[in-house]
Amino acid sequence: MRFHAPANVFLRRAQLILMVAAIVPTILLTALGIILLAIHSNRGVAIVAGVLVLTLCTTSLVGYILGSVFVRRGASLAKVQTDFLSSVSHELRTPITSIRMFIETLRDQRVTDPAAQHEILCLLHREMVRLDGLVGKLIELSRIEDGRVPFERAPVAVADVVAEALAAFETVKLGTRVDLDVTLEPGLEVMGDQSALAQALANLLTNAWKYTADNKKISLHARAIGKQVSITVTDNGPGIPSHEQKRIFEKFERGRAAVDGRESGSGLGLAIVRAIVQAHRGHVELDTAVSAGACFRISLPRHARATAGAATATG
Image 1 (cartoon, rainbow, N blue to C red):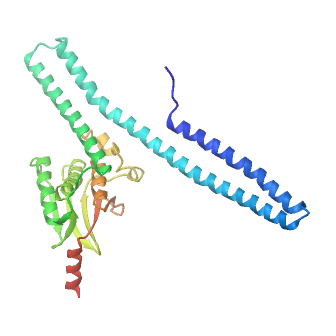
Image 2 (image 1 turned 60 degrees about the vertical axis):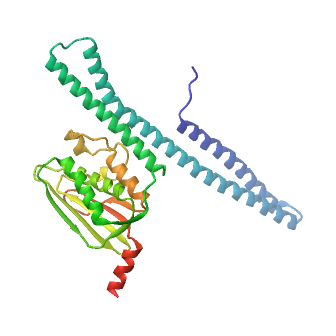
């Protein structure tokens, strides 16, 4: 069996070869250009030859710099791909291992009590649902990032997006008492897909609910800021440490509070939020200015009709 080196190893080798191929001739040609300028009897020919050689050296250096940039970017992408595959393998291994263990237990008849068998079957079903949900989210995220999801492009009232998101959030919290404060500026509209935007907002609400204590307080505010619509979701949870904030939107990235609290989740919710918002030409960020809890801010381009109407009213 032939062993193939990782992609980042090939990229590092390519960078080394590029450096040797560009720098060594450049040094030699630079020395030649200086010698021609210094000792050639025909000054005109010497100057032209020297300038041409130095120009070639400059071109080689520029080519090396550009090549190095592309090689480094390739190495970075290769690392991201490796990290992603490692994360996927880790996340899939856990439910698959549990499913295999439960199946082997039933196959070998290690448990004969009907009640215990029923409990194992329930656990098996739960792990299969978890696995199916993880694979479904991965496929959904991949399709969104590749632009293969046909999002609608129509004027959408932010109030309708919020209403749909709150309806989805209600099924998640299942009657749990939450102090929810919703404030919407009237007349806000954006261009996009109502269901997709509601899904992104529902993901933020679900995260806020999962990672707060018993006295849950969540606020949702939407207002216009210039040509943008700003939607914020704030909670009274423990917040997100500064060293985790840069990677919080990456795939399979889960904060320490989620891991320590053993909260269920795949680490794909915020990645899906970012993909949906970016597909609508907006951006989502973690507002680090808040002193406690977490505050996520979605900014979307305001629909031109609503912007014109606000300008007319102001005028």
